Picture: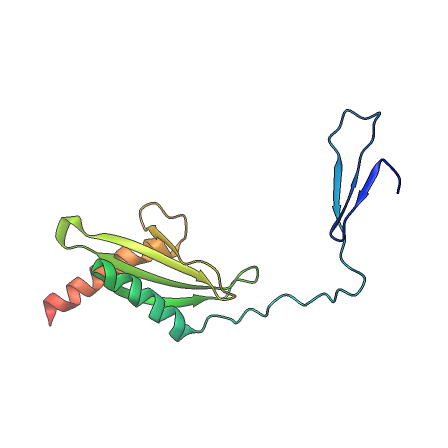
Length: 134
């Protein structure tokens, strides 16, 4: 065995005596290793998204205002608007989730750059007026 190279089944570690750089570590797969395809990601259905949103809102006493699916070429999204609180303390939220899956993003409508956030407050105002008129 070369004194400058140590061999293990998982890695080869090479030392260069003339270099001031740290040793290089290269991980090598065994010759009989079979590579697997990445797991298939299931798209999030409209009903699954609604279940997640309603569950999140239930835990904070919020109300779902509306939900839509945004067909963006780069990244299609499920989006929902919600209200939390009452009266002057009421806040509007925008909840988004990529159709391909990922994490649920929750942001206040007042801080969001998403155009749907502006619709949330207007929609809630319209619902208030319709309720009062009924």
